[in-house]
Image (cartoon, rainbow, N blue to C red; front, side, top):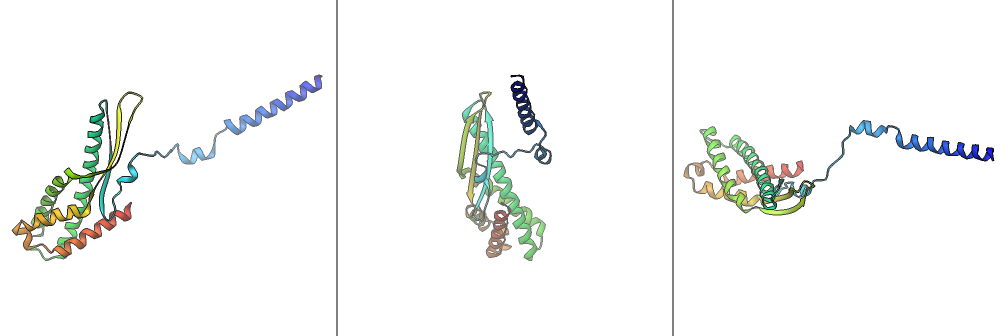
Amino acid sequence: MKMKLTGLLSVTMMFAVVTFMSCGGPKETAKTDSGFQEVDIPCQEKGYSDSEYFRAAGNGDSRNLATSKDKAMMNAKTRLAGLINSTIKSVTEQYTNEIDVGDAMEFEQSFEQMARDVVNQKLVEVAVTCEKTGQLDNGNYRTYLAIQVKKDYIYNGIDEKISKDKKLQLKYDRMKFKEKFDEEMDKLERQN
């Protein structure tokens, strides 16, 4: 009986040691990952621009459901406006470098201001491509959303505005500008 008890105790101890070593010891992968754990953000995948659309995603938290949605929309529109404005700035710089403009700096500034005005007007009519709302443990609401505006909608707004400005119209080559605009949109798609 003593032999059976000793054998059973030995097997139990060995099992405990093996279990402890396999579960309790430090893992090598934890050291190399530095504690990084990827987070899946709702609607983020719908917020990447391509050659046809400017897109952005945003989120917002509030105790009020409607306010969380408003904050998410404001954040997404801010990102979208920044993306469009930086794209237009890049297009304008490339465009003015390729055409012969007497006062390139004045032309760029006028053009960029006009483009910002167009962007502000066009952001009123963005399309929501994704929206997800949930309630947090603390009772607040969190909304994630993604929005988009068609590239041609922005381009046509700028083109129309230039057509009404006689000074800018004199220095404007529609085909050259469209070419540079399309090149920048292709770059956006490749970045995403």
